[in-house]
Image 1 (cartoon, helix red, strand yellow):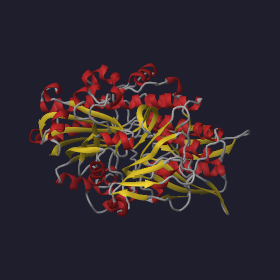
Image 2: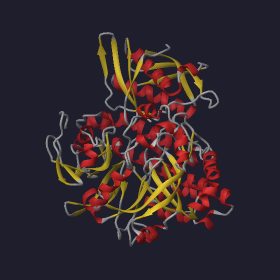
Image 3: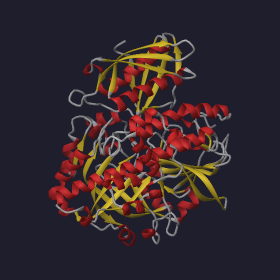
Image 4: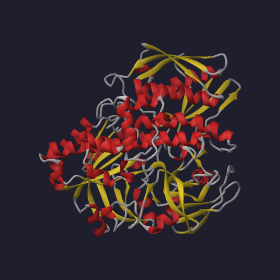
Amino acid sequence: MTAPRYTVVDHTGDFAFEVEAADLPSLVAAAVLAAADAQFGLESLSAIEPVEVACDGADPELLLFSALSEAVFLADARGLVPVTAEAAAVPGGGLLLRLGCDRLDPARHAARVLFKAATLHGLRVERTAAGVRATVVMDT
Amino acid sequence: MIDGPDVRWERLDDERIRIPRHGAMRVDGLVFASDDLVRGGSIDTQSLRQVANVACLPGILGRSVAMPDIHWGYGFPIGGVAAFDPDDGVISPGGVGYDINCGVRLLRTDLSVDEVRPVLRDVVRAMFRTIPTGIGARGGVVALTRDELREVCETGAAFAAGRGLGWESDLDHVEERGRIAGADFGQVSAKAVERGRGQLGTLGSGNHFAEVGYVAQVDDPATAAAFGLFAGGVTVTIHTGSRGFGHQVCTDFIPRMDKAARAAGIELPDRQLACAPVGSPEGRAYFGAMACAANFAFANRQAITGRVREAFEAAMGKPATRLGMRVVYDVAHNIAKFEEHSVDGRPRRVCIHRKGATRALPAGHPQTPREYAHVGQPVLVPGDMGRASYVLVGLPSALGEAFGSSCHGAGRVLSRSAAIRTAKGRDIRREMEDAGIVVMAAGRETIAEEMPDAYKDVTQVVDVVHRAGIARKVALIRPIGVIKG
């Protein structure tokens, strides 16, 4: 999946965005890519390193929180930023996120904003006529 | 919980707003705020509702308090202070924040601003070179082994001081001597360890900074002298916290506490208020991990102190000891810990949460450093990078009204995108240079995002706590050199 549909929502303290997709796995993948795009711009990245991440959560909001938290961890601890993302439901619950990541290189990548954590602040995954939508606040 | 469109509040006097107990509130709310801040929109209904929501949590004692720099946070408001009964109350990651023990350290020097101006750019450049900034910044000290990280978590600032990045005497002027008891490294996840191992001695991003300044105004000469501050004297302020390590600890515990709150039947209007009884397995585990992150943050500011001293030594050609580069104080402003306070006239051990609030102890308090026992604990309140920061001193009313707490900073008024829009067509770095302030930043848009216009005027905030009598103005510090993430 590429080019996630998301909208930046003005937030005084941190960074918020709204993301939509056809279903929950697609929403999670889109949110992870939206976070990468907001920080580094997907156009500056190339998928060179495959990474698989297991996400769990008792409800859609916790699943989304888990996936975004994994993305923050990958960037901060390992310098890996997703450029492609696919999510699939795992039997028994949870999601498997398959990412194609680029390795952060200060010579090639400049951050527009840096996310330090995902939050549950006001997080709700809502059903819409077209699928599902969520507004996410990331701690900066 | 208070989830209606309006939260009820009344003005008590020019500096205080009371949110009377209503709905599910267990205690009143008390907000230190002037009419100027309310009318100017700096304090909004959402923030006041968060004060009320905190007042609904089990085991809250006294009142739910907020400082004049209050703004909308995750669950708890930023600027919030709440104390909980260790037996019947809760502990909440939302009451501490993601950046556990984000805090401020102030160094003083014997140098005058006129002595430093000619080498200022060298000093700032050396600081920028040796103190890594930005996300994922690594290598401030060296990559720590797991055992070394455990030692950092258990010993705090003493770890960095013992590695040549500080003086033993520094610890005398750090809250809790740079180490909170109760750290349990066994509660720290592998992910937190991985994020933390390379980040000791790094500044981070966002609103974190290291700033060279000078004392531009002395309001309380006797207290300023006790703190080693004099008009025209050069200072260094360090604002950072526990970096990715602390963020990961908070991230790890939010889902656990969310589950624990449900299990305990605690109704939450915002899942970021997730909490658990202090004495529950989840509560004890969180405290143990949080204390590790708090101690990491103390060590981080200590390590950066070592780098700052090296930068001055190189520029001034003298050892830091001969430049008088002593730590004035180091305060946490995102923390939960156990303290003794008077509640309803009786001394009680409480689990205090300060989220965007600074401890402020008066003269004579046993936790005030010996050298400051006759004046009180320094309260450090940074402003924005273009205007000023304040040094205050704690007063007895802080103990009586706010569990020994005061404000912590200015608080944003513009979102980052709004700041960038406001800065469009302007050269903020040039504006700062024209004002005599050298700025170096890692992020492409950091300087625009962190422009002075993006923040409240810290003077408005400080005036409230000064007039309310919880902390008194001692000195005003103006920036001349800033490094940011």
